Length: 223
Length: 293
Ligand SMILES: Nc1ncnc2c1ncn2[C@@H]1O[C@H](COP(=O)(O)OP(=O)(O)OP(=O)(O)O)[C@@H](O)[C@H]1O
Ligand SMILES: [Mg+2]
Image 1 (cartoon, protein in one colour):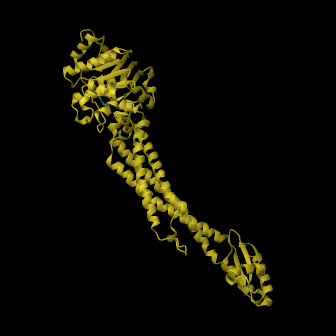
Image 2 (image 1 turned 90 degrees about the horizontal axis):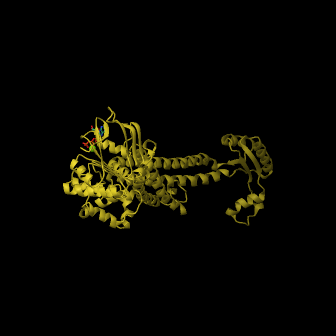
Image 3 (image 1 turned 135 degrees about the vertical axis):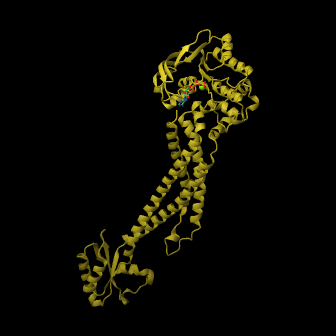
């Protein structure tokens, strides 16, 4: 699915991430942890082609990102659902349109029943017609998650998806991710929330990646 | 959230942007208004140029009025003189029947030819370079005192050239107006693209292709320009229509109108303006998008 081969990234100063070699196998469930500023969001951006590695190779669906043209990047992103840390929306369109956006831009039909089901599943049934700027932080994150999964993507990347959620809502979100993983989706979640990781481990087999000293390593069972 | 939801959705994917949108409508309207006048000018100049060029094709005539006994002599002298005049392609004396035919409109068919001292007419055709009118007149006066050169149509030559130039100027004006409109709409579209950087970023992230995003902008600007151009074209055509009608003297300014199907030409400017807006916006959009990840 997603493979790094000795990849590195630098925003211009020194390297933020170095010698990254790892592979997210189809159907795997990974967590990514690390201190604030260690490069979690940067790593995720490398995973969906918003950033290109400054050294080494990143391969998405068996194709090197550097070799993808702009349309190919767009098509690749349709297979990857992303929940960004700063959930950005089209502020002039209601939540329902924003959630359906990935379907609409790819010209696929939007079954209204599915959209309504998904919205009520993330607890936004009442807010389908609201505009994004009026949402709370947690509501934005849930809307972003709904938008990330609506196309049934092969890969779901989530950057601090529970950062603004209470525990109950975090568990609900985790349940959705676990369900998607059981359906065969590849999941990568960047989070600080160790409780969430423990909870996940009790439901599904997950691996934890930890960023330390610019490298990404597989964490032991101790967390 | 029915099917209609996704149909109309594409038109709203870019938020309505106040200033650039209005700038586009206004520019397209004003430019099309001007283009209608430039078009009317070109067409009027075209008609004049054609008419005057026709007049130039006509040959000049030399009228010889002399006592009957000198007529043949002077005619011979004139023909000989014309043969040696540079700039004259051919010349010939008209027969009495031809002269009669020329006079018929004035005197009626029952003209008693023999009772009237008819002038002898000599028809001449000039070469493309033309002849020296003053020099010819002087030589005629010296060699055939009864001969008068009637070349009143020659003064139209510079006017016909001017009309031709005017036609080119009118068309140049239309092209310049089109380019100015393209430039203005490019600026407006770039401003709209910059103002919607966030929208574009979100669209890119959810997998929208460049052409999809560009379409969202081109659709809007093309519509805007088309609407503005429609208003401008109708207003311009109305302005031309309200000009005084062409009078018999064929004055240039009063002849500044469209004729017949020509009134449809201002309408053709509307899709043209829309096309210019489409191309300008598409170019601006792709240039902006190239710079983003
Ligand atoms: N566009 C950018 N230009 C320059 N530096 C950047 C840019 N984006 C991020 N950085 C820097 O790179 C480092 C890693 O940022 P990143 O957002 O990947 O961290 P993170 O692990 O996601 O942090 P957090 O847990 O706070 O979200 C930070 O020091 C940040 O300041
Ligand atoms: Mg981050």
